[in-house]
Image 1: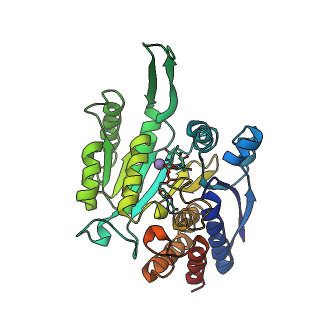
Image 2 (image 1 turned 60 degrees about the vertical axis):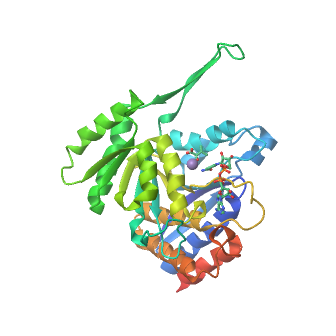
Image 3 (image 1 turned 45 degrees about the vertical axis):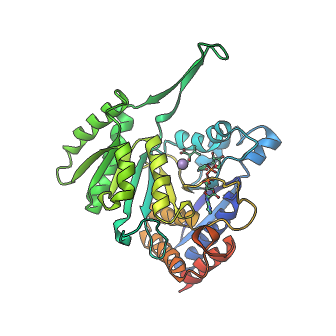
Length: 354
Ligand code: NAD
Ligand code: IPM
Ligand code: MN
């Protein structure tokens, strides 16, 4: 039996509610399979921890996390702590500190999931977003000059290194090649006359190494429109950190909503643990009510199986999610049902048992 050590950071708001269901699913799959097992260690970090200690995580938090095979995270950020503090001291600190430079976000309309677009066939929404996850507009670089003065000015610098840009684009080409799909780059070289011109240039360069992969390139504004009007154009997509953030919430909206959108923050070299988390946040508006949709975090758990070289188990979890969606009896209010978070989790497990 291969045992994996998982660090759990359930975090804030609905984070703990949805993560509990994900853990139940991971344990159930492990039980049914018999060859894989999980050892979970919970870290109480987040905004409540900050209120008690003045810190989002322990000073040696990164050292502690380093020992784990993966991190399973719920959500970070809650009213009361400024978002730029809570996120930079926990979530973004981990993504950056562990060089999780690939953010894999599948935007796939699962069987049974509702879609607000008319006339779109289910199989036409099947995208794999690969978001740059370590630099760009999230470099944390900038300045705040002449604070409070009339000439006050702030700078938020996008940082695009050759290494950082090349590696994510190359990763996306590899994925597209493996999947025998096209690769679309989304950028903005017309207005962003340094960063996105550079991005486009590197995309062209790397594309020469992959003559077998069909490529497309769109400006981000047009791409936002096309994702709604003609989503089938997009298969594997590679884009910058900020554009990827925005476009995957948009993608979530056409693929069942944020309650169904999953992501994996990957350090491909496996020098550091990778982190699995739903795309959504702490949802303060519904936190504590027990009605958050746990399927996004369960889908993230399924990505963990892929990462642990057990795509068969990942597929089994995804199938169980589709079974629940198709049945429609046990879905949360965001999907038009009236089931609770734990009822949905229990139903996924019901289908995993077969
Ligand atoms: P949000 O994703 O938390 O919520 C947006 C809307 O989607 C809300 O109406 C919410 O109720 C709904 N929603 C989200 N997840 C849902 C689920 N699983 N089931 C049902 N409905 C769901 O975004 P926000 O309100 O902009 O942000 C709230 C806080 O979360 C902020 O502090 C923000 O910075 C943080 N945040 C954290 C992460 C993360 O930890 N990865 C991601 C996004 C936002
Ligand atoms: C996400 C979130 C984060 C991001 C925030 C909370 C910093 O929106 O994971 O999509 O922008 O990456
Ligand atoms: Mn986001």
